[in-house]
Amino acid sequence: MNGVNDIRDGKAVIGIEFGSTRIKAVLVGSDNAPLASGVFDWQNELADGVWTYSLDKVKEGLRTCFADLMNNVEKQYGVKLTTAAGFGISAMMHGYLAFDRDGELLVPFRTWRNTMTEEAADKLTDAFGFNIPQRWSIAHLYQAILNNEPHIGSIAFFTTLAGYVHWLLTGEKVIGVGDASGMFPIDPAAKGYDAQMMKRFGELTEGTAFTAKLADILPAIVPVGECAGKLTAEGAKLLDPTGVFGAGVPFCPPEGDAQTGMAATNSIAPKTGNVSAGTSIFAMIVLEKNLASVHREIDVVTTPDGAPVAMVHCNSCTTDLDAWVNMFGGLLTAAGSGLPKGKQYDLLYSLAANGDPDCGGVIAYNYYAGEPVTGTQSGKPLVFRSPDSRFSIENLMRSLVYSTVATLKIGMDILTDEEKIALERIYAHGGLFKTPVPSQNVLAAALGADITLMKSAGEGGAWGIALLASYMARTDRAETLAAFLNDKVFAGMQGSTVSPAQSDIDGIRAYMTLYRAGLAAEKAAAAV
Image (cartoon, rainbow, N blue to C red; front, side, top):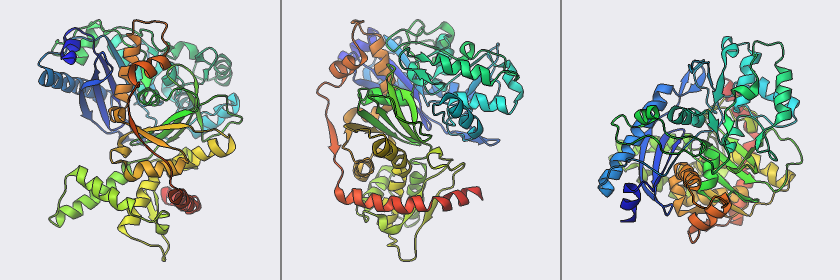
């Protein structure tokens, strides 16, 4: 009954996250528990060598996902969703969306998945003394300047996907500090764009066709917990063409999927962290102090409230594993023993759990795109083994599961071995863990740390951004985000924790020795 009252009285909040394969909307009640959801499945496309999503598809996905949420609310509760106490938009971080003064897109959206900015990333890293990965928005902008692309003189605004959708709905060109930290480095003291690095960028671009000031074209940063605009009449019509859902709903700052993952797992305190594993995989470790060295494999971004975070990001995670499951599913169907998709995963994961700890010498690379962590410019999925390897379905499946975390482990080893970062509490969430055995056990062995799956983690980033919207709508304005999450959201919430088994630690260590040695073969294959 509380859910009905929250919906009818406008006390619920809404979060929508644009993931790489699914757009999800979640309605959350005044107790911060999910009430209903809506989804829209989509995929990026490779167009003229660029991984992209069309803006028409962005709008279609927004409308369809929200319509699904509204329909499910009415079916489940018998009331219409007409308003909310707060709203939030989240999306995949990084990438490049550049617009002219009329709001027209200048070049197709370049997503995080592209590895076309190596020259710019290298030069900016050297100039800033701060790691700038290829997928960061500023790397895309500077590469376009280095390439002297025709559009660079017309740029009036550039932003992320979350910033773009927020702009569509509210008319505000703003962003949260966490998503902003994937566009341009943040000064942790000021919790704003680093002024010295912005000045250095201006020096680097003097004499080019890019004449705008960087400060004028970046989205403004709105602190967590503050209102970042309200749903306009035009935005409401885009969101719900039927006119049932009205304008005026306040929005929290738009955030990146990394930050909503932190909110959804209550991992914003130092020495805590989370791993998000879906189409891509990334780990976020909240730092007590700055890193001692610049590492090209490690991003430094921020929590939703601006604290520094070490981020290891890998472009490929479950896509190749899913392809193998689909292939084996086709075999089962051809044999007259077809299983529902969920049962296929359960079966194949159970086989993986029974594989040898070192996968019997069967090594898999899941690279659908380039991986900066290992210095590969493009991807090509690959399986290799020696003639005396123990090649079985169990070892193949275990190797495919290992491959989802192998590149992440290479980056994380830098944090733990070289930077001596302690890992105390790691939460995991994402599609990889829908069947937790053996994926949760494998991740624990790879990181050498306890891994916890919260019961709420399945709601993912859409729930995370809804929590940030709920925090914005709080009555106690002095309450910190950490206190809100600890006391109002996660108090008493249970999860399942797995500790690393020594046999798995030894097994993945042996696997990684062969994995590292075989990277030359992966690079050669990708170059063909």
